[in-house]
Amino acid sequence: MRPPLPPFDLDGALRKVRAAEDAWNSRDPARVALAYSEDSRWRNRSEFITGRAQIAAFLRRKWAREHEYRLVKEYRAHADNRIAVRFAYEWHDDDGQWFRSYGNENWEFDSRGLMRVRHASINDVAIDEVERVMRWPAGPRPQDHPGLSELGL
Image 1 (spheres, rainbow, N blue to C red):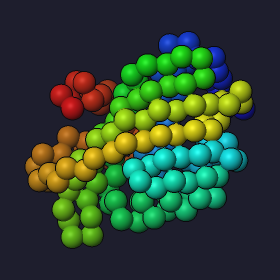
Image 2 (image 1 turned 180 degrees about the vertical axis):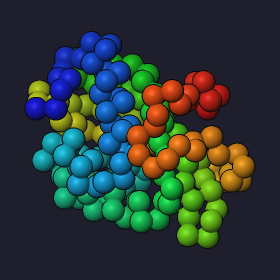
Image 3 (image 1 turned 120 degrees about the vertical axis):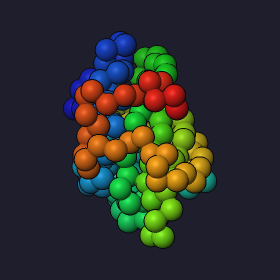
């Protein structure tokens, strides 16, 4: 079981979004993969992924090239076993070029609270290092750090 469980109320949906953000900011593929059902299906950009093993492999590749990754997710809507979020994250490549990636996700959960479907649409924008706004130490975003709306993103 991965509380909160569907059907989600507003508080449960907000807690699920923050838990997902915190897990992804850990950059631990094994930990993150445990939040998804064994047969979870993803569409991430143009890549289609099925199951925890493929999810973990995808995340290992992702974080091997996206250095100093920092993510902020924001709740948009929920109903029954579904949650919609928007997000932005900052990272740099091997050459030191910084990016801010913007996206939207639609999530669907099973009765145990594991995500069984994830659809993500993402765009990358090159930024200068001085434009970064996600500057906390590696790990979860501090509770007092502004969210996307407060950052104007």
